[in-house]
Image (cartoon, rainbow, N blue to C red; front, top):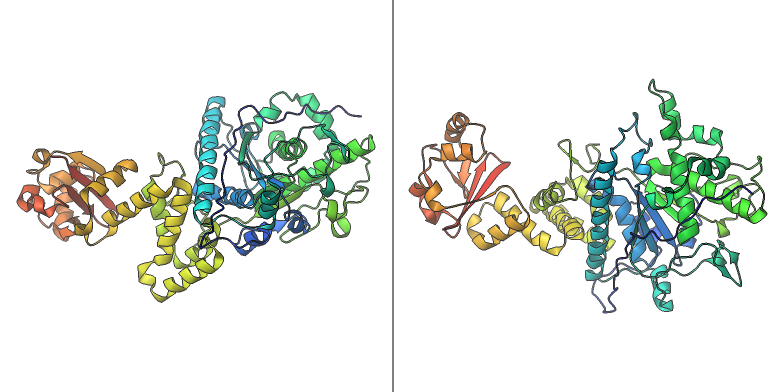
Length: 551
């Protein structure tokens, strides 16, 4: 028998987020139904590797998705797989988020026309730290968000709660009377419970694997002709640049991730974007080949049928309706592993979701303020908000339908966009962030600043670390001409520009137009300010500075 890679259990740095599903009855909750059906109804599902996955999730199972550490923060386009994991976790399954500490040093060629520039080790380490903390916060806030809305129902959640199962880590090589070593059939599945989402780093199990070990185990089970047939490889082979051996091998690294998690956590499902189809089926193929080799005690025969490359609907992983010939375990009732892909999300204009004027909308509030995050969703078009409400919120679908119907009756109120912005901001940044973002939106866009409270404005902009807030003393600004003031504050590029644009009506203070660049705040008196303290200076429609007078 070929030597096996060393396997590692739970990495020492992993953490669990403990959550409590409230037993109290709530007025609004997600109806109990299969989590795959729920995700499909919300527009999450692009393809399933096997239709038997629908039945598989009727009882608790384990699912994972990879997280690419190519930046120090995730952006809103990365939310879809995390939201899907949150659905599974809340429905009673065990979700694993795997940070690509090892694979991130190489880069996935899927969906790319050029090779990614390799990150320096210190940059990669920084990204891993930032994203790991971010993923932990997301799931912690996400479970609080769901619990606040009445919890999440489903067959797996009911089963897990009824048996009072707790989150456990399967131990490799553990025997039971019924299964022997490392069971994998439906009847051999351990119970997984309502523990916390686990955030892992694949460097923990790749760190001690030598190149020769990898070739003797994973490499020996990989078929080059199948690897060449992957879209991520075929598309690059037709280009002048081609594809490096490093990127060509990436699919084997991701396949090993799935096989390792299958062995150490009994992880049965991999979730990824639609461009990950080839990598996902490579992992399932590796799991089947490893199981067959272990069960037979011999090397895999050369007559094994390989997995198909592409799919846009529910498909089996082998020929003849899901049976992989020569496998012996290909029956869909005892499928050892599954894949689920989610669609690429774009805006109604065809732009990649998560990009705003060419810049990513980051989850890190140091890179994208909470207010700008809120505004991104508040600016959604009517077409987009109808697609995004089911995906980015956990509101029941009938509640969403009612909200869209109300929005259709009075589109000018943009009630659906406000609901979307409120829900996603609370999910990602917490309930307090919603209140602050609403206050900031009122400051920036309301035509009635007199309804604001100065203390609320200061608190909201301070907590959001919004750079548009400037604190100053009255004596320092009261006699400065507004043309010079807006130039000094950066609202215009120069005083000359201020002198040209202000007479044209481009500048307002608390909704009052200022037409003379020589006007001073003292000429307006402090009564023109919100509670004598807040001056909202607006140049055009997008540029604002909020002055808070401290004395």
